[in-house]
Image 1 (cartoon, rainbow, N blue to C red):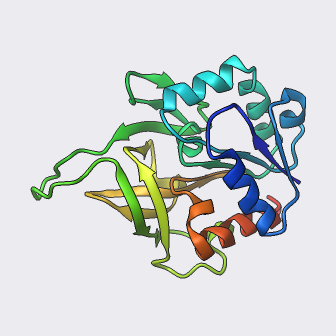
Image 2 (image 1 turned 180 degrees about the vertical axis):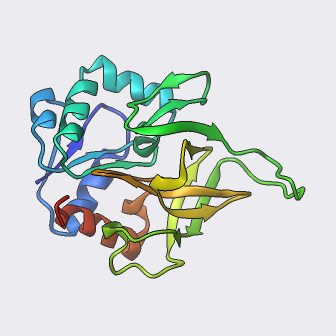
Length: 209
């Protein structure tokens, strides 16, 4: 059973349908007790970091999410859901995240050192550059393309958590993992075969394997 956190914002139905498509049983809920006792947990997210984390807290879901993560279950954050795993975001002021991963969420610049002009948000297909093995990348070829929509990216305290990067003016984390906590900056539910395979890998994974 994969539990999807419903805090009223995000790509809830699309991530739910994608998980069902790869054979997972899915429960979408805003019940604190159900979230705290989840077997696998997915935290989706679309839009602004501050609005998302505020809804999580106002609905009393922060501590149940942290309790579930502390039990060692497979826990996946998607897009802004991945960003909320970190300590702080600089999007429209400073906002405190869940603090499960060390680091901040910062904005892409419109220009970088070589003078290359970038459109922000970073939107569309981009390739993955794996940096270390992960169950999330089973049956995924290096250079696989995934679908991104974001203006901010994770700047971890250390690179130890970075599983794969993509390039947009700089190399930014596309997949992160630390212990049982995992994140994807892209939208796996919109990333066709590669994204569905990664969701299948997550749905079938136990942290002891």
